[in-house]
Length: 178
Image (cartoon, rainbow, N blue to C red; front, side):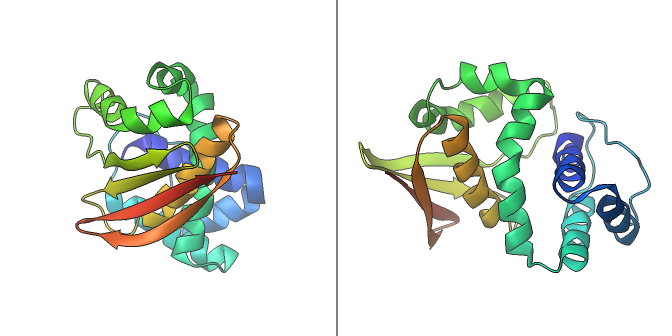
């Protein structure tokens, strides 16, 4: 995964739980670098090791760790210089969801070995959006659940995100607007 993912994890832990927790997590994960290079590729194993260490230190499940980080991710990406990119592909949550694949394709032009997920809006009306998520990586469905909540917050929408379960080769979510 790109360093931006791991750097996001690092800043998430420091902001929410403090430097001491990050040091404990990085020690368990055998992560020696202070900072991650945002556009450098790191092994997926390192990211999963960091999440495993978070689970040990914070005494939470991988699903809880990934979902909490997913909620944080949108604001982290925006504060890391990608705010314009987010708005370029959607001034509101609906257009953003329709353009997530296009955004990942655009990112692939400068992140050459990106393994991007894909998203498909399969149904929508004024009260809900149903989204399918597909990825070659295992275990990230809770991250996407949190990410969808992060998008609601980013676009100042009110609603709930329901995980509808595995669907074909992917996962399905329903955003219910309130």
